[in-house]
Structure formats: C-alpha cells, structure tokens
Image 1 (spheres, one colour):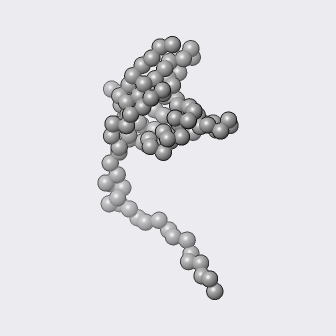
Image 2 (cartoon, helix red, strand yellow):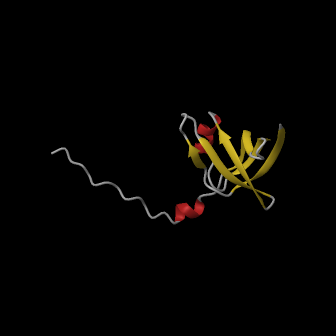
Length: 103
C-alpha cells in the first residue's frame, strides 16, 4: 500500500455516508495548496473526527491509498480551528420553545 501525508484546510462539511454496520463512514474535502483532495475516514476514529472537525479546520493527515485510488485517513492532527468571531457578532439568537407550565 502507498501512503501520503497532507496539510491543508477542510473546505466541506464532514459528510457521514453510511452507518449501516454501527461505525460511521465519513467524507471530507481538504484544500492542499489549491488542489482539492477527497478523503475518507472509517471505524472508531470517525466518531471523534465527526465532532472535532468542521469546515475551515486546519488539518494534517496521514493517509493510505487503496487499489481504487481512494485516500483513507489513518491519523490526523488538528492544526487550527476556524474562527467564529463573525458568527458571534452577527448572532440573531435561537428561538426558544414555548414555556411549559406545571399548572
């Protein structure tokens, strides 16, 4: 098997493709020096990955290339989290449910 290492920025949301067997099978797109790399992650590693990684996250990944030329993430390291300052200042608020009374 061939291996590759990439450092870049996530340019898509983490898409959960399949959970039929109990473990997620996820896809992301990583921008590496202007070229988009499509990456997959499976198994128990994907549980933590889904919650830690989002669009705009800086990542360094170690991948294995299979026979079908797909890149599977073996290990990853988060280099930077996206800044959410613009979203904080433009926060419109979330509608709260109607107050439920006991009487």
